[in-house]
Amino acid sequence: MKTCRECGHQVSDHAISCPGCGAPYPAKEKWDGWGYEYKSKTILWGLPLVHISFKFRPNRMPVPAKGILAIGQFAAGVVTISQFGLGIFSLSQFALAVYAIAQIGVAYSLIAQIGLYINTGYGQVVRQIGALVAP
Image (tube, rainbow, N blue to C red):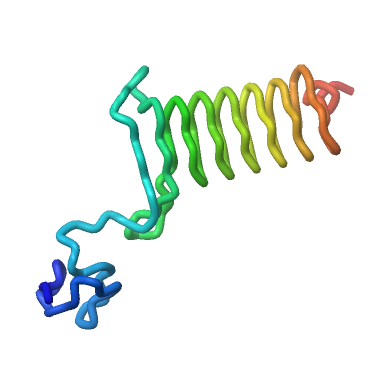
């Protein structure tokens, strides 16, 4: 048995929540959220070389992956693999990128099911931005 880090109530080391105050994983000294996160120690241009994040903070806000290679539900970086991605090269369900492969995307060059592109685009419902703007 250990004490809850929030209220001091006695709890099992395997408890998922405290019966006294409801704190998640009360036996842990520090708890910073649900899920998985990895950041490489190598830094380029102020970003980690690899950042993988499938994590939620205790307030249930997602932790976006930010790195040269960013992988996660939400990602921003040079190369992104995500559900919602922002980057130079993006493989995402929803993407805003220079070069993108996406289900729904906006990019300079795009392969998508639905999307807008500037230079080249392929897909089911893919339209050039210039054609939509110009009469």
